[in-house]
Image (cartoon, rainbow, N blue to C red; front, side, top):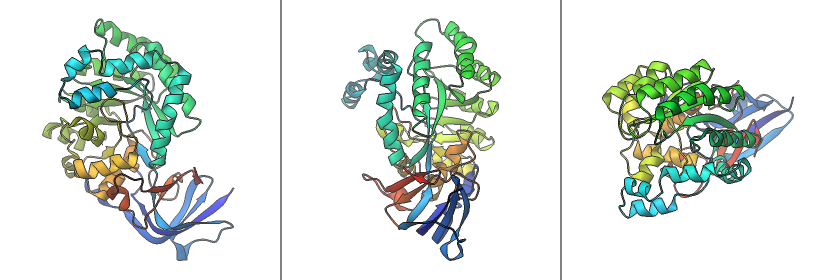
Length: 399
């Protein structure tokens, strides 16, 4: 088995493996003048270069900082069409309801995506995923959700499956927008037809539901997520983006992997997350793009919750193609410290996807890591407007 000793690392910086909660999110290990031994795509030893074990092959990394590869736990990278007219109208002050009435909004993305075939969806998504990877995302969750009709949802999931040969992707079935008529029948069909088909073909590892006044109710969400669990799928929620209607509390009750958005969360939701094993995934790109209040990242950590950060890459509310930028925005908009933001974007983001084998540079973990252009890891959360990531390694192989 091939062994490589990576050397000349100015700083090797890592959180502890596994979920980190509250103040523990600030506890990073920083090893100056470090080395790391990788064999078979897995880390076998990390420590000061002077103490490194002998090996046949060394790889000099050039005296720069090394951090774990980032995980993006919330992305909608598969879509067709664009929302440029919506963007211009919204900036001009046109209400979203009027944009919808003009044929825009999320339903325009659903029409365009529903009309696209698998090959077109793959071709459209590939450069988006390449941008995320270049920014430091070595693992990305990708959701369906722009299909509405089941055939379109399945085409999105088939596209994600095809892209898994090129990228480390975690596929999620997103139940995103209810139909304008017959929603009770739609929810029943999701539970009895769509979820079983997705589980049977192993097209997704989790089911996500958008729980909001304009989307699915708490009762509808409960029925969908219970069906997901009955078919062996993990559960996630979009909740508290605009209104806190009980989605966060339901996520905690059901033991969901994560509940995402949380811009409208208050003390009750923060307390529920702090008392649960559900990861609170915040999406600062939405705050930047839509001007929403920032998710209470500082309050969540201070209460003892486990917080993750995602891009929410999508055409309407977060055209953020950089996991590194999402990390940097979490510091500025959600008041995370740089150390907390790194933990939120690595081990906690992985746990939000049900993964425990990545996100830390410790023995036994996958050798997914980044070299920066700088000898100081803090340039990762500090830098805006250019990419602080020099190289991306997955399984110890430079991409």
